[in-house]
Image 1 (tube, rainbow, N blue to C red):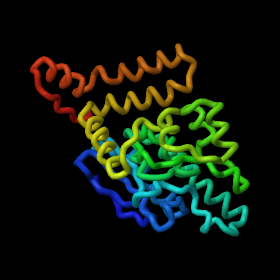
Image 2 (spheres, helix red, strand yellow):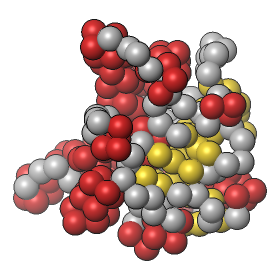
Image 3 (cartoon, rainbow, N blue to C red):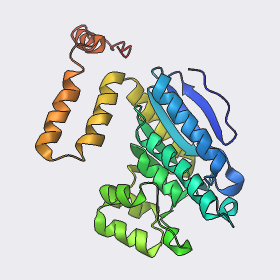
Image 4 (cartoon, rainbow, N blue to C red):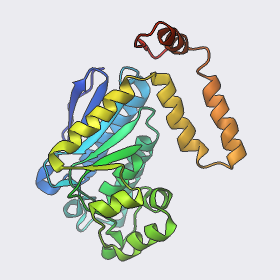
Length: 265
């Protein structure tokens, strides 16, 4: 898949079907500004519309200290209400598109994730992180609140009481707390986080891509439903896979004692 060059993102291909996306503003803690939002929105839209060859996406930050420090407050300093609202509407579209990405999206958290940076982590399917990273929602300390899913995704990840503590105190939690609370899946030394995440991405990419997408869809939407409705949703997702070439190939490969060759069809 051919993708354009972006001003604030660095793209690379660790393997043919895994895309690595790096937030590339290390001089300002990879802060989210208007241009980065435009870049990310364009990328997520392209992956949704024409990303069949991409089986997994990994998101990380440039540098070795900060994944993303949140919104760029220098750009926002002195913004009028109209300009602030217009920018935030762009942020909203970018985050919702990110959440709807059909491919698995993994976070390789190379450093601290604050405010909008933590909201990016929560939009990912799961995360591996540096054992030195810290996490916080700092918005109430500057007169706003999380506005890109933070108040909804955080309670779903760590429980409402812990989430309210983080959201209302603006105090950071450390890596061990993040792990024990279920915010991240595993901790690694900072210089090993990306390799561990790419290893997981490679394992995902080796599986049937249509199955992976249906699993993601079933978890994402089923978790918002009453349980019996969610069971039915899961069966609908399952039934979409019965007539696929990959299902036939997977069973044949098992019986022939070889690795399957999935084509995503």
